[in-house]
Image (cartoon, rainbow, N blue to C red):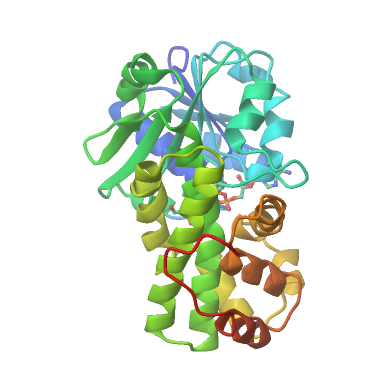
Length: 333
Ligand SMILES: NC(=O)C1=CN([C@@H]2O[C@H](COP(=O)(O)OP(=O)(O)OC[C@H]3O[C@@H](n4cnc5c(N)ncnc54)[C@H](O)[C@@H]3O)[C@@H](O)[C@H]2O)C=CC1
Ligand SMILES: O=C(CO)COP(=O)(O)O
């Protein structure tokens, strides 16, 4: 790499690595921070990340570091860590980037904060954006056509700054200024993907899956409304778009986790040795608690949480089906 990187990525899992490859596809210098020293080594020595994104030859303009101090002065930073460690990692930055683009999908356990709340507190001088949508990392890394929502707290001026760095011929961001809406879709669809995987694992059929997607989307809209998200944001790529993708593919870690739970495996056993992140398992408890506190009807989210806590899936499904019949537009629990 010659010259100072214009863009940095924090987190060298599948998605951070795919985003680094994407933004480097026009020859741009990209510095990626990785948590594991062996990932730093593999990227710098072999231009590869076999631990998290097997089979991709990374662009020669991508370099890796394990030292957050090396990111100082880089104006655009994509944050792509697991949601539960974002606060800790941002607090280790020497200075705030001008543009901080959040790409993680989740809600912080313990605090109930969205990632943009976490980022505003850790980096008050940065302008926050949220990049979210139906984006399996391996497809983006392969250059397959993909579209996302890019919600900019800094409005159109920030969008104009970010476009050259992020948009590519097969990667189309769509502008929004609804940062909260863009985040809520991605966080909730992970929990709903576990629900749809459970349907598969339990052999409940495709009608049940379609019902869960539609009724889960109603839960997403209700939660979004309570937090000030716009419904049209949730109807877009970062909400409905991502819900459709993750609720129907075994490429989704959340969907696959649901299948395994439906087949009778226990959540504790499934989570213990994981190296990849199924964010829905961490979001479900905090989301269920937030919904209960605010009296937002989210029975599917509550059901997923109960199963993750060890309740038998078939009993939870039976209870879900036995609820009183009601209007499709009913908002009460
Ligand atoms: N993989 C995908 O297709 C997509 C993932 N995302 C989101 O991106 C975020 C990151 O996911 P992936 O890149 O898929 O991760 P991954 O599942 O491929 O890898 C796990 C990541 O967690 C990191 N990690 C584990 N423990 C850590 C710690 N204590 N401190 C810091 N980092 C630690 C690892 O270094 C690695 O980067 C998640 O919020 C996910 O929902 C969003 C869109 C697509
Ligand atoms: O967010 C994703 C696709 O948009 C990735 O989904 P999983 O985390 O379930 O693999």
